[in-house]
Length: 139
Image 1 (cartoon, helix red, strand yellow):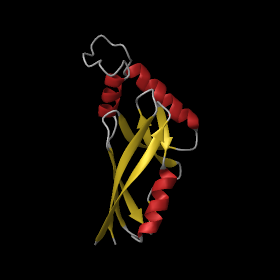
Image 2: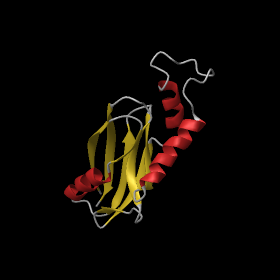
Image 3: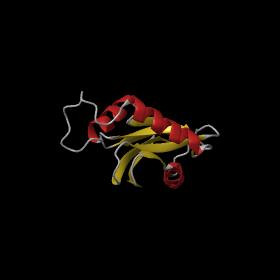
Image 4: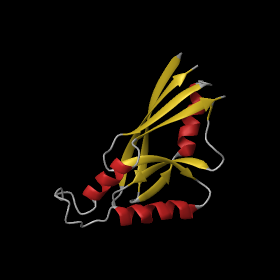
């Protein structure tokens, strides 16, 4: 068994899903590992990771609109407000979604479905530079 690690820097212009499948695929191809398990972990508490449809952008917009309705800004329930009205909702949204993904690797490629892509889901309104740690174990 071999293993390797990498960090992806992903700039986000604000709320929404940001596809970084091609970055992961390119890195994976250069590792020389053919079969194994890839783990991705977002290193932030106000962003998350998703495997989601990559064919119809309406899916991404619908997800954003749904979570905005489910976890609204300016809810009087929130006490943590020092970092702005979008911060606590971003933490809740990250808690409801995923901060890590495990993806099988076969023949040097991620075993994703035809319409699946890997997305960083930014939950804050302003731009950020997010980091996703990758760990690949295999042979």
